[in-house]
Image 1 (cartoon, rainbow, N blue to C red):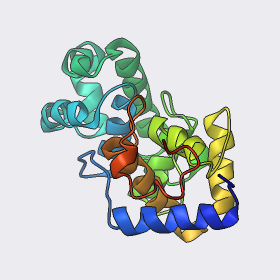
Image 2 (cartoon, helix red, strand yellow):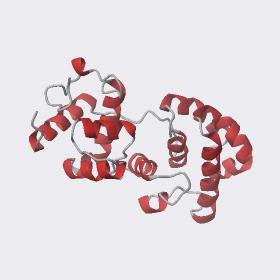
Image 3 (cartoon, helix red, strand yellow):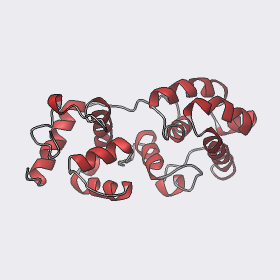
Image 4 (cartoon, rainbow, N blue to C red):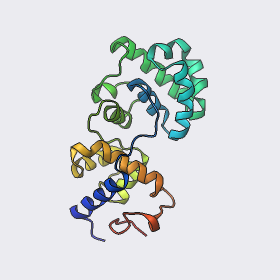
Amino acid sequence: METNANFKLEELRILEETYRGAVPQLKFGSPFELLIAVILSAQCTDKRVNEVTQVLFATANTPEKILQIGQTRLEEIIRPCGLSKSKAKHIFATSKILLDSYNGEVPHEFDELIKLPGVGRKTANVVTSVAFKTPAIAVDTHVFRLSNRLKLAEGKTPLEVELGLQQVIPREKWSDAHHWLIWHGREICSARKPKCDVCPLSKVCPSAT
Protein backbone atom coordinates (compact mmCIF):
# COMPACT_ATOMS: atom_id res chain seq x y z
CA MET A 1 0.00 0.00 0.00
CA GLU A 2 1.36 3.39 -0.94
CA THR A 3 2.12 5.55 2.04
CA ASN A 4 2.11 9.30 1.47
CA ALA A 5 1.04 12.57 3.03
CA ASN A 6 -2.61 11.91 2.20
CA PHE A 7 -2.62 8.59 4.00
CA LYS A 8 -0.96 10.19 7.03
CA LEU A 9 -3.55 12.95 7.10
CA GLU A 10 -6.35 10.39 6.87
CA GLU A 11 -4.82 8.31 9.65
CA LEU A 12 -4.65 11.37 11.88
CA ARG A 13 -8.22 12.36 10.99
CA ILE A 14 -9.51 8.92 11.99
CA LEU A 15 -7.48 8.87 15.19
CA GLU A 16 -8.80 12.30 16.16
CA GLU A 17 -12.38 11.32 15.37
CA THR A 18 -12.09 8.08 17.32
CA TYR A 19 -10.25 9.35 20.39
CA ARG A 20 -11.26 13.00 20.60
CA GLY A 21 -11.20 14.12 24.22
CA ALA A 22 -8.87 11.34 25.37
CA VAL A 23 -7.08 12.20 28.61
CA PRO A 24 -4.27 10.62 30.63
CA GLN A 25 -5.11 7.63 32.80
CA LEU A 26 -2.69 8.68 35.51
CA LYS A 27 -4.40 10.38 38.44
CA PHE A 28 -2.80 13.51 39.86
CA GLY A 29 -3.68 16.73 41.61
CA SER A 30 -0.62 18.86 40.97
CA PRO A 31 2.38 19.10 38.63
CA PHE A 32 4.52 17.42 41.28
CA GLU A 33 2.11 14.51 41.62
CA LEU A 34 2.08 14.12 37.83
CA LEU A 35 5.88 14.18 37.71
CA ILE A 36 6.14 11.44 40.33
CA ALA A 37 3.41 9.35 38.68
CA VAL A 38 5.16 9.48 35.30
CA ILE A 39 8.49 8.49 36.86
CA LEU A 40 6.73 5.53 38.48
CA SER A 41 5.07 4.55 35.20
CA ALA A 42 8.31 3.32 33.64
CA GLN A 43 7.78 -0.39 32.85
CA CYS A 44 4.55 -0.31 34.86
CA THR A 45 0.87 0.05 33.99
CA ASP A 46 -1.01 3.25 34.74
CA LYS A 47 -3.53 1.22 36.73
CA ARG A 48 -0.84 -0.04 39.07
CA VAL A 49 0.71 3.41 39.35
CA ASN A 50 -2.66 4.88 40.36
CA GLU A 51 -3.02 2.23 43.06
CA VAL A 52 0.42 3.08 44.43
CA THR A 53 0.09 6.86 44.22
CA GLN A 54 -3.23 6.71 46.04
CA VAL A 55 -1.27 5.42 49.01
CA LEU A 56 1.83 7.54 48.46
CA PHE A 57 0.11 10.87 47.91
CA ALA A 58 -2.06 10.41 50.98
CA THR A 59 1.19 10.59 52.95
CA ALA A 60 3.63 12.45 50.75
CA ASN A 61 2.51 14.57 47.80
CA THR A 62 5.07 17.40 47.96
CA PRO A 63 8.86 17.46 47.78
CA GLU A 64 9.03 18.33 51.48
CA LYS A 65 6.89 15.37 52.49
CA ILE A 66 8.84 12.98 50.26
CA LEU A 67 12.02 13.96 52.07
CA GLN A 68 10.28 13.63 55.42
CA ILE A 69 9.23 10.01 54.90
CA GLY A 70 12.72 9.12 53.72
CA GLN A 71 14.04 7.08 50.83
CA THR A 72 13.63 3.70 52.55
CA ARG A 73 9.95 4.22 53.31
CA LEU A 74 9.41 5.63 49.83
CA GLU A 75 10.92 2.51 48.33
CA GLU A 76 8.57 0.32 50.37
CA ILE A 77 5.48 2.20 49.22
CA ILE A 78 6.35 2.19 45.53
CA ARG A 79 7.62 -1.41 45.39
CA PRO A 80 4.53 -2.69 43.49
CA CYS A 81 5.55 -0.45 40.55
CA GLY A 82 8.81 -2.32 40.08
CA LEU A 83 12.36 -0.92 39.92
CA SER A 84 11.63 0.51 43.35
CA LYS A 85 15.24 1.12 44.36
CA SER A 86 16.13 3.25 41.34
CA LYS A 87 12.76 4.99 41.23
CA ALA A 88 12.90 5.85 44.93
CA LYS A 89 16.44 7.16 44.51
CA HIS A 90 15.39 9.36 41.58
CA ILE A 91 12.23 10.65 43.27
CA PHE A 92 14.10 11.44 46.49
CA ALA A 93 16.90 13.24 44.62
CA THR A 94 14.44 15.11 42.41
CA SER A 95 12.47 16.26 45.47
CA LYS A 96 15.64 17.63 47.05
CA ILE A 97 16.60 19.49 43.87
CA LEU A 98 13.12 20.98 43.56
CA LEU A 99 13.38 22.31 47.11
CA ASP A 100 16.94 23.56 46.77
CA SER A 101 16.72 25.10 43.31
CA TYR A 102 13.06 25.69 42.42
CA ASN A 103 11.38 26.70 45.70
CA GLY A 104 9.64 23.33 45.77
CA GLU A 105 7.91 23.93 42.44
CA VAL A 106 8.14 21.82 39.29
CA PRO A 107 9.81 23.89 36.53
CA HIS A 108 7.75 24.61 33.42
CA GLU A 109 10.66 24.43 30.98
CA PHE A 110 11.54 21.20 29.20
CA ASP A 111 15.28 21.91 29.46
CA GLU A 112 15.00 22.27 33.23
CA LEU A 113 12.80 19.22 33.70
CA ILE A 114 15.14 16.95 31.78
CA LYS A 115 17.94 17.78 34.23
CA LEU A 116 16.05 16.13 37.09
CA PRO A 117 17.03 12.57 38.12
CA GLY A 118 14.83 9.96 36.49
CA VAL A 119 13.35 12.43 34.01
CA GLY A 120 13.93 11.67 30.32
CA ARG A 121 12.37 13.19 27.23
CA LYS A 122 9.13 11.23 27.59
CA THR A 123 8.56 12.30 31.19
CA ALA A 124 9.52 15.91 30.51
CA ASN A 125 7.18 16.05 27.50
CA VAL A 126 4.28 14.58 29.49
CA VAL A 127 4.72 17.11 32.29
CA THR A 128 5.08 20.14 30.01
CA SER A 129 2.12 18.97 27.94
CA VAL A 130 -0.33 17.81 30.60
CA ALA A 131 0.58 19.98 33.59
CA PHE A 132 1.56 23.17 31.80
CA LYS A 133 -0.44 22.93 28.54
CA THR A 134 2.60 23.35 26.31
CA PRO A 135 2.35 21.43 23.01
CA ALA A 136 4.54 18.33 23.17
CA ILE A 137 4.64 14.75 21.94
CA ALA A 138 5.78 12.18 24.48
CA VAL A 139 6.96 8.99 22.82
CA ASP A 140 6.24 5.98 25.01
CA THR A 141 6.13 2.35 23.85
CA HIS A 142 2.63 2.76 22.37
CA VAL A 143 3.44 5.95 20.47
CA PHE A 144 6.71 4.48 19.21
CA ARG A 145 5.06 1.26 18.02
CA LEU A 146 2.08 2.91 16.33
CA SER A 147 4.11 5.65 14.68
CA ASN A 148 6.21 3.01 12.96
CA ARG A 149 3.30 0.68 12.13
CA LEU A 150 1.22 3.47 10.66
CA LYS A 151 4.33 4.97 9.06
CA LEU A 152 3.32 8.31 10.50
CA ALA A 153 6.91 8.76 11.63
CA GLU A 154 9.38 5.93 11.23
CA GLY A 155 12.45 5.81 13.41
CA LYS A 156 14.74 3.54 15.36
CA THR A 157 14.74 5.73 18.47
CA PRO A 158 12.04 7.62 20.39
CA LEU A 159 13.72 10.91 19.49
CA GLU A 160 13.60 10.13 15.77
CA VAL A 161 9.90 9.31 16.08
CA GLU A 162 9.20 12.42 18.15
CA LEU A 163 10.84 14.69 15.60
CA GLY A 164 9.05 12.89 12.77
CA LEU A 165 5.65 13.27 14.40
CA GLN A 166 6.31 16.98 14.91
CA GLN A 167 6.63 17.28 11.14
CA VAL A 168 3.31 15.61 10.26
CA ILE A 169 1.08 16.76 13.14
CA PRO A 170 0.09 20.43 13.54
CA ARG A 171 1.74 21.86 16.66
CA GLU A 172 -1.57 22.75 18.28
CA LYS A 173 -2.53 19.07 18.15
CA TRP A 174 0.72 17.55 19.41
CA SER A 175 -0.52 16.94 22.94
CA ASP A 176 -3.89 15.56 21.83
CA ALA A 177 -2.30 13.29 19.22
CA HIS A 178 -0.07 11.81 21.89
CA HIS A 179 -3.20 10.64 23.71
CA TRP A 180 -4.89 9.37 20.51
CA LEU A 181 -1.93 7.10 19.80
CA ILE A 182 -1.68 5.85 23.38
CA TRP A 183 -5.35 4.94 23.58
CA HIS A 184 -5.29 3.27 20.19
CA GLY A 185 -2.27 1.26 21.25
CA ARG A 186 -3.99 0.14 24.43
CA GLU A 187 -7.39 -0.58 22.99
CA ILE A 188 -6.71 -1.99 19.52
CA CYS A 189 -3.17 -1.87 18.15
CA SER A 190 -1.47 -4.04 20.77
CA ALA A 191 2.12 -5.17 20.41
CA ARG A 192 1.58 -8.86 19.73
CA LYS A 193 -1.96 -9.28 18.46
CA PRO A 194 -3.31 -6.06 16.97
CA LYS A 195 -7.07 -6.19 16.37
CA CYS A 196 -6.91 -5.25 12.70
CA ASP A 197 -10.37 -6.72 12.07
CA VAL A 198 -12.02 -4.03 14.22
CA CYS A 199 -9.53 -1.20 13.68
CA PRO A 200 -10.97 2.01 12.25
CA LEU A 201 -7.62 2.56 10.52
CA SER A 202 -7.49 -0.79 8.72
CA LYS A 203 -8.31 0.67 5.29
CA VAL A 204 -5.44 3.16 5.38
CA CYS A 205 -2.91 1.42 7.62
CA PRO A 206 0.12 0.18 5.66
CA SER A 207 0.65 -2.62 8.21
CA ALA A 208 -2.94 -3.92 8.35
CA THR A 209 -3.36 -7.69 8.03
